[in-house]
Length: 174
Image 1 (cartoon, rainbow, N blue to C red):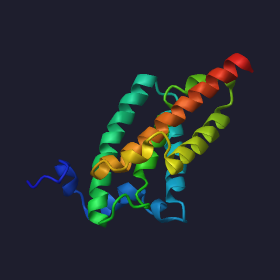
Image 2 (image 1 turned 135 degrees about the vertical axis):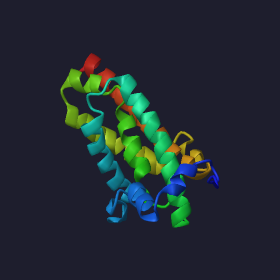
Image 3 (image 1 turned 90 degrees about the vertical axis):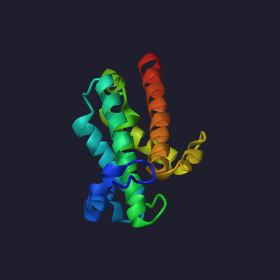
Image 4 (image 1 turned 30 degrees about the vertical axis):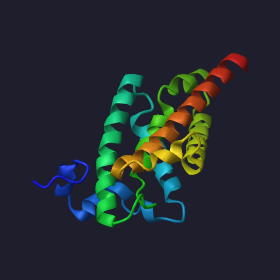
């Protein structure tokens, strides 16, 4: 079997249509002028359905698996679309958004403002994903699917740090 350039041989078994639908979340990656925002909204829904009450260990382990899976699929998506990190690939945002909230449900439950944390997480993630501060921009140069996904994971980590700091301050000083 001919292994893909970055070792994701199994992704070659998928049809073009399957790969495209997975990395673009069907038509969602093609809607409007801000596909990354669309992917982030889907990511919030994904988080609330599958991660909100998950224990931190489960959240992290599932998140790591999704990062690996998304890297493989986004690598194959780039190859088949013949574009480098195209905007219509939104799987990276979808799997990164739940990482914004690792352990944050503790603060959500302490304050009772779940919706506020979700909104703040969404806005901070979009800010960090668009602006790419703290060296996040350099991560996009990683090869293949890793370059597509890892900058979003870094934006999620920065968001999680802000949400934890905000939760701590809200509980202890308000």
